Length: 166
Image 1 (cartoon, rainbow, N blue to C red):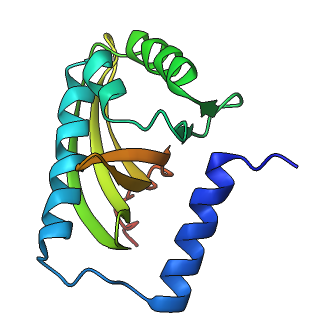
Image 2 (spheres, rainbow, N blue to C red):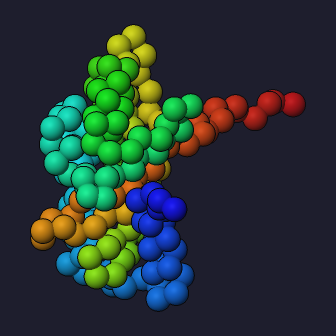
């Protein structure tokens, strides 16, 4: 039976998260490193820099990226490269602002959950869209690499209507 790398990453995450609890105290060097990784990844994404993004993902095991699209499961560098190239065609520019992040982990494995506001310029349309990004990182050769990633836009808040006057 072949085990997928994402299944191993999720299993490690669940085991470490729920059995041993968070291992990185707030403001630990690990938390700073993971936050720096997330910021660098987002910076490369905003620049549409596919080569830098691919250098930030694991090749062994191959990284898994999941999104909310119908064909939103991408395994390995080639599939993730295609995903990124297709995404970058959909917008003129993007600016992602982190509003929250939680980091934990143990040893050479770390995970994060984060919330962002994406300011998207799609040409004729512009939008601010709330988003969530979660990921599992593994330290390989002294460098954090993304092993598992899930990015999704959240539901847009309902427009607030002024109260009706009586």
